[in-house]
Image (cartoon, rainbow, N blue to C red; front, side, top):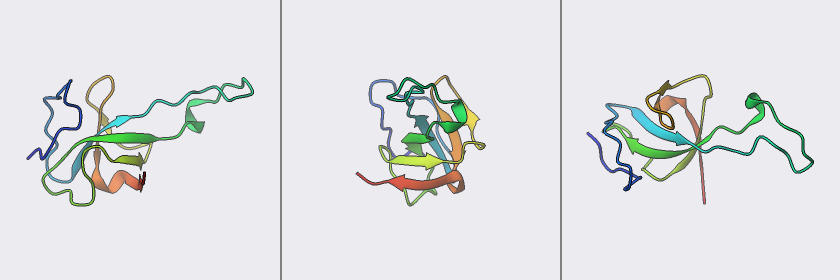
Length: 93
């Protein structure tokens, strides 16, 4: 069951089940202050949790997390569905 949806404006009609987490990757600037463009692999893999499944206990919608870049299913242009185990850490405010 979907506990809460973080994005109120664009409510996704995707309900994570079990230990799945719906995340929205945070796009980073691929260009450094010195003007050098970084490859995709050097960008950070931070995301905002949009929705969580009913078995997820350690996260809540709105949390910022870092996830394993090689895991997840792209469900829309800006949303990924990943397993809870693929979340490497939470970023505290």
